[in-house]
Length: 215
Image 1 (cartoon, rainbow, N blue to C red):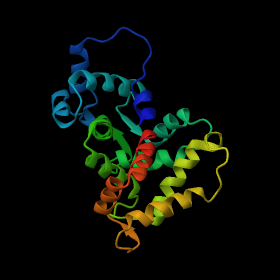
Image 2: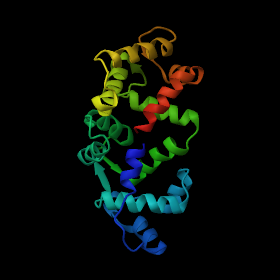
Image 3: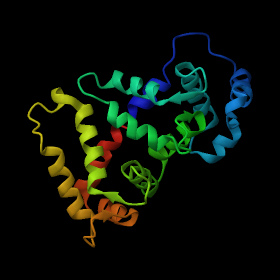
């Protein structure tokens, strides 16, 4: 998540706009995208008004149009993982943030997801992570879906991060996870199975937290 937060909150050194101007921008700009008001977002997230202002300025600086498309999102991620291929993981992560499935991420989409990942309860974080792995949005994680995400993470980290990485390591990782998660052995993992497995297994929880760091 540091990649997203770091990039979208970076901006060149310049005179800081007044609070009134920032509030007005958030309330009134990009009418066609109907951004949420500052007070409403403060009520819907775990961020303060000041934090939302900072996030909004960074978001607007990186995305002047008020929305992020997938190509821009991939470009952002590529900057933070120069030794690997971040394109597939960025694709899956973009889909998780794009809750309306319209091919773009608005500021509200961004901060709602960020609020959960940074300040949500453990269950909320695990629910969000489950949503990321549930690629086809059918309410289950299949072995194939988990393999796609895990391979994308390994590809993004690149050979310099894992110099001795063998081709079958991602699959071994998935097999171990799936064996612990798929309690009834029906070939898919439900939300409750996913949450229970993560809560019961400290190693698995650490692995999920590691994956969260690249979100």
